[in-house]
Length: 151
Image 1 (cartoon, helix red, strand yellow):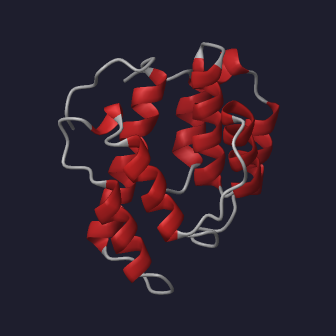
Image 2 (image 1 turned 135 degrees about the vertical axis):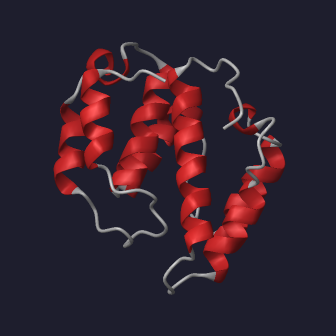
Image 3 (image 1 turned 90 degrees about the vertical axis):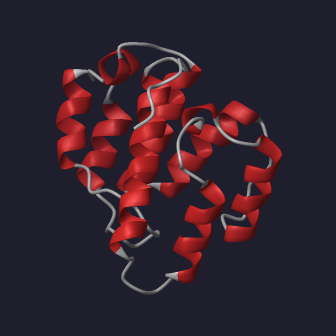
C-alpha cells in the first residue's frame, strides 16, 4: 500500500511492535510530529478514519493517553481500564474486525500471548503477530475500510 510521504518517513522511524507501556520506550519526537501534522499530510484525507490512524500511531509511539483520548472523543464512551480482561470484553462485543477477516489474526490469542509474557522478553512469534496486527489495521484504515488482500 502507498502511504503519504510523511507517513512513509514516520513508519521508518517507528519502533514496532509496542508490547507494553514501557516496551519500547516512548518515542517523544514521533509523538510531537503526530500532534503537529495535519490530517491531509498524515493520510491524504480527513475525518474519523484519520482520527483512528492518528490514534493507532500515537499508541505505537507510546502516547497512550492521547491515543485513548482520541478514541474516547470519537465514541463518547466512558474511560476504560486498559487491562487484558477489558480488551477481551471489547473483542467479544465487536466480533472479528473487518481488517482481520480472511486472516489468521486472532486478537484473543494475541492478548493471551502478551499477558502470558508480561514482564518478560516477548517471543519472536508474539513480536511478529503484533507487527502483523498493527500493519494490517493501519492498511485497513488507510484504505478507507476496503477489504484487503490477506497478508
